[in-house]
Length: 358
Image (tube, rainbow, N blue to C red; front, side, top):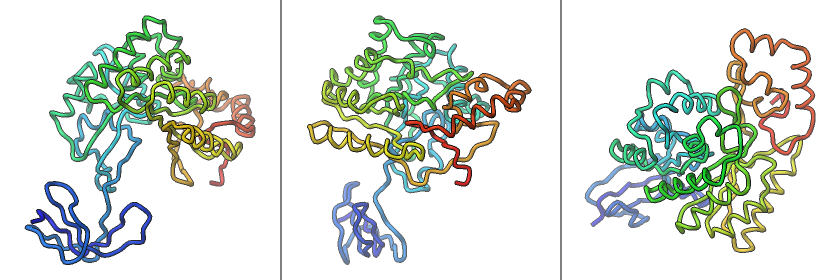
């Protein structure tokens, strides 16, 4: 006997088929049958309602919010039943108590989160990655959650104030690799990082992972190969090439997810070249995926939070400024002319390309 039957639902199966009306039977927590006139202990009438598989949102930044909001709003209301956290390597563990303010300020800058909300909301019941995952397990969540080990957090934990300023030493890389392995043992689904020039932290400094050299990347991604588990997730800057990522995939035998492959109006072929390179790598036996976004991708911004401009070289003088000093910089003719000029030049990757009409 089925435990539950959802009757006469309009089913969208997620595989591209046309919607169809049918019953869905559930037994022991799993879909047991799809058909007509199915029987079960509990019947839910779904006439006129749509039914579809739960959405896996593979790119979220709920790492902080989940500590105070187990509902992970608004994701469940949008059909999400699994959320992946830790993307881009912007996690909140590991984190020493003395570094909490910096971690929160980095999130305020790189992800546009409210610093006051983070200060009041985050439940700092952890320091290490295992302690963070244990806390999430104790508190529970309305949907399934899986998380990456975050590169920038590892660098900050191991290197302190130097994390966004220099390359790591061999000893520091070894310590970070050990933390990746510790995170995997605690249940992390892989290792995430970013080389994107759009990712800047407090004071306009680059997020720490952007300072990693190829040797550091090989060592940390290599931990996945050593553990024989986990996915490597990277938010790609223009200087990071797919052949290097294929090299990591080949050396470790692990899947690689390359984000965020976005269309660039000043260099429209770039994203298609990356996708073609990924397809060719897969033809050679790798397991690589290119993560794209919806098109068109729209953004809201204000000059209080000008995320769309923060990857521009010409915007860097404004990044560390606040208050009147910031407003004075925005008023400088030379600064404004520099931003206009940079937006008019082609770039391999840029979030905004001066398309004011869009």
